[in-house]
Image 1 (tube, rainbow over the protein chains, first blue to last red):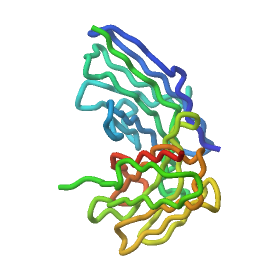
Image 2 (cartoon, each protein chain N blue to C red):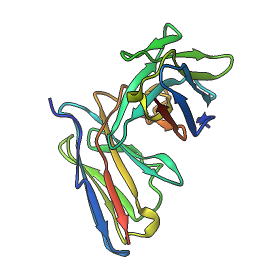
Image 3 (cartoon, chains in turn cyan, orange):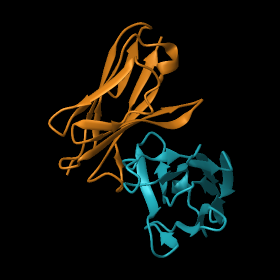
Image 4 (cartoon, helix red, strand yellow):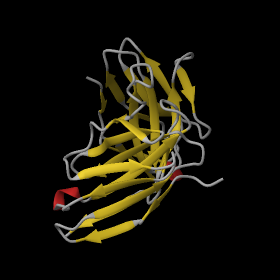
Length: 117
Length: 113
């Protein structure tokens, strides 16, 4: 069965500090991996995705994640966070269309990132 | 271009009543998904449409839940005889084709008293 585990429910950090949000997945088949972000009182937005190719993927606002097949991880990192990064972050997996699963997302439990001044 | 829209944004109902939640996907998106976000369960998949058919209904929690999609566009999620445990935010997402990036609507917050 496919599952996603986010190891930290809450991560408090000071502004301009580095941050890592951890995500591990479990699947017997190849998966696509995503990070979605939900800002306060807003809908879910795609932050970045890994489908194939380079294992390091980046977002436009400085986040990056690395797909590590041997460790079944897809941790999200940012070298210097801003107050505006305060949000809930969800790690997700999908088996896409390959196995006729329709691309439904399996969500992790979410990590609340709280950036303090 | 318009994103995914959902209505109503908030719905308060009494236990035992039926409710209908609506989703308007992005025009041209063939795949449509319903998810539920609740405190105890996190984000859960409910049902997925490809066109007007639903190949995967595996996430619907009970037979009180049903959904349809018409014209390859608008979808309605219906909950019959609502229970307090149905209280949650119901999210709709669409994608150009199944397996690609999903765009989420703002959600409908359902409260069952």
